[in-house]
Amino acid sequence: MLDLGRLRALHAVAVHGSVGGAAAALGFTPSAVSQQISKLERETRTVLLERQGRGVVLTDAAVRLADTARQLLALVEQAEVTLEERRGQAVGRLLVASFATGARGLLPGALADLRERCPDLDVRLLECDPYPAADLVARGEVDLALVQDWPTVPLPVQDGLSRLDLGLDPVDLLLRAEHPLAALGTVPVAELLGQRWISVPPGNICHDWLVRTLREAGEEPDVLYQVGEFETQIALVEAGLGLGLVPRLGRAALPPGVVARPVSPEPARRVYALWRTQASRRPAITAALLAMRERWAAVEAASAVAGGPGTGPAGP
Image (tube, helix red, strand yellow):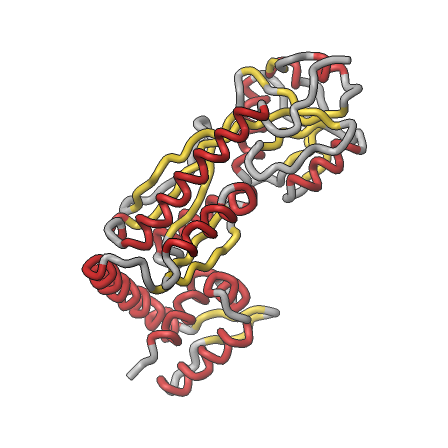
C-alpha cells in the first residue's frame, strides 16, 4: 500500500517544481522530502526523480503518480472536513500562506488567538506572494491564504475558491523630510511624475500598480532600485536615493528624517483571505477567519487613532 505522506511529498515537488520548494510548503527540510521520495521509489520500484542541472525533474511515471496523489489528497481533505465538522472542533493541520507584510502586521496576533482558542489545531505559516498563494490554495497545497491586490490590478482567483474581504490597506508616499513634496499635506498623482523610484521588482502587485498609475498619468516610472523588502526600501529612502510607495500594514515606525504622505487619489491594497469553498464548513477555517477578522478590526482602529504609522507633520 502506498504511503499517503510520501505521495504528498511527491505531489508537492510536482506543484513547486523543486525539492526545496516542496520542503518550504510542507514545513519539512529538503532532506526529509528527498527521503520520502526515495522511500516511495522503493515502494513502487520506479524512478520518480531525475537530476537535471542543479535541480530535479519528474519522470513520466512520477507525473502520473503525482496526479493520482492530487486526487487522493482531495478525497482525504473532503473526509477530514466532514469528520471535523461532525466533531465541531478545529483539529488537524492548517497551513496558512501570507504575503510578507500581512504575516508581520496581522497574523502574529491572529495566530496567537487561534492557538489559544483551538489548542488541538496544528497551524503552519508559509510566507508567499499573492500570485502563487492563490494558486497554492486552488491546488490544495495550503488551506488558507491571506492575499492582497489593488482595485486596478485584481488578483486572478480561480473558480472553487471563497474569499473574506478584510479591508483596505492605505499606501503612503515615503520621502525625505526636506524633499519639496513633503511640504504637501496630500500629494496628487501628477506631482509624482519625474521622480526617482524605489520599488519592489516587476511581477509584484505593488510594482504593477506604480507602473500602471504613472503610465496613465503620461510617464514611464524611473525605477532605479528594485528590492523585495519594504524595510530595505525605507532605508534607501532614508539615504535620499528616491521615493517609495509603502503600505501601512506591517510597517514599522519610520526612521528620523523620513516622512509619509498620503497620495490622491489614494492608493490602497485590498486585503482578503482565500480558501477552497468545499472546506468552508471546516471548523479550523471558520476559527481562523474569525481570528483574522477580529485582528484586522484592531489594526484598523490603531491606525485610525495614530493617523497612519509614521506620517509625521506636513511642512516645516
